Length: 151
Picture 1: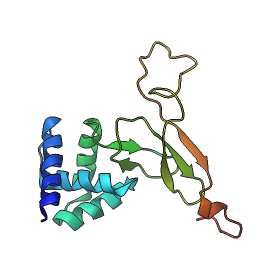
Picture 2: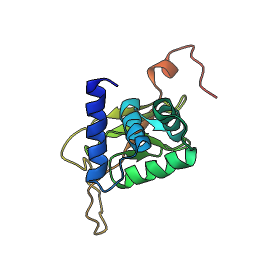
Picture 3: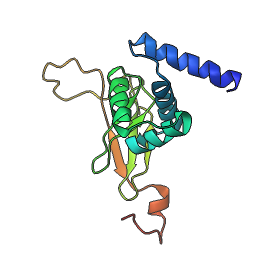
Picture 4: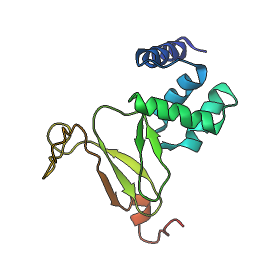
């Protein structure tokens, strides 16, 4: 392991401990996989963890994702008609754009203003601290003439 990778592992482990979680090799690998992977579903996260530390059950991955999401180290995104995806970009209240055809998902920074970026017309007495927006359309590949939509 290189010195920079070792240092990154130590930093990730310290982040886990700071939120009250055990810093197991699998959790460190999972958090690093999610942070490097963009918008991954649980299967992709499990594959990334297995490449780093060897065998890990899908159930263990789901349990770790739940714990990391609750600790706000990972964000869970639930696009309609798609499995939940996970990302390491947290705390900045960004949004997403989703391709209706192939399911590609990309980050969209907040358009204007401070978090939560949108003001509810009626907050029903809630103290709103986050807004989730998913813009939908066709990605460049799917909107190109002659492209065929994904099944």
